Image (cartoon, rainbow, N blue to C red; front, side, top):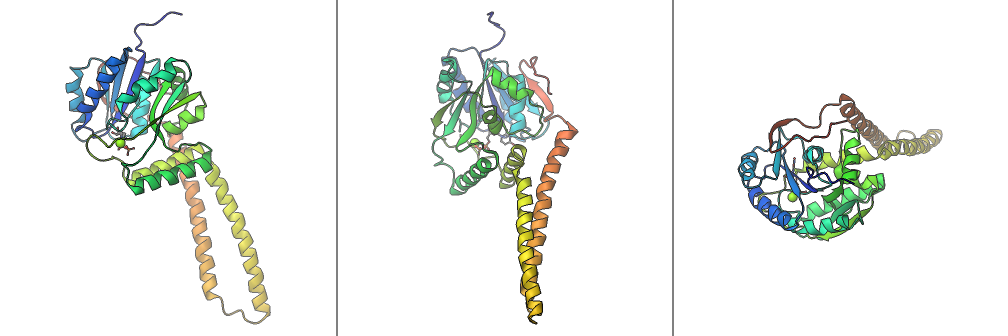
Length: 321
Ligand code: UDP
Ligand code: MG
């Protein structure tokens, strides 16, 4: 086997949105750890359309770290798009994806590398051990999301994070997926490659607050679920069947009260039924609408992101499918 020296062994992909405050400290930690790891490496920071000075900071930092490369999106396309862009440019035999806010500690990189280097695993996933720094609402949301995801798709994502190492084989597999609507965490689990797991405690952010609004999180959860499962569609059908059964019973009751001469009463139940079935209909149509919108997005085949500026060596890029 010939070893291609132009290919670094390890690529680190970091999505960053409005991280100007902490990015320099994060890169300092990251490069210190990477230099100690003794592997040939490169770092890709994807500025996901930040409105602060993230890109300017990156450009300044690049003079300190020649292994630093960057992409700047024209606008905020979302973390999934940023990860995808990083994976397309990464040249490493292994790629580690991690957050820019210090919540995925660079100190864990050697632990992520070990199972891969020993050939035990194609994916090494870091699992969140404690969520002490999250409020009860974040923990509750995560719990509901993971439970729903498991029952709808069968993917067990409890405490899973995007902090993971992927072998080149896994990266190429993911890049070959033709779909536009992406959910990185779920897709890597879906591939089924041998996975090792390490636990980590999530530290607080270096600076600032989480960039996810409740609306964004809800949208993300709906996309993730509908992209990975058609179960909500079959649920509508079951809802419909149940509704028909209930309607049949109510019809019998109405006939009975008509025969017994007590038919006038029942305005309340009538209103109730109308509201119930009306809303069930709306719900069903809504779910269909979500799938239709997703099909629409897939069919348009628009690029997942647009790049405004680049930093470092961007000659290597996997062609989108
Ligand atoms: N991020 C991004 N695009 C976005 C939102 C977030 O690239 O639209 C990045 C962010 O800069 C960070 C990572 O994704 O590096 C995780 O974001 P955040 O810390 O806000 O989320 P949480 O830690 O709550 O999952
Ligand atoms: Mg974070």
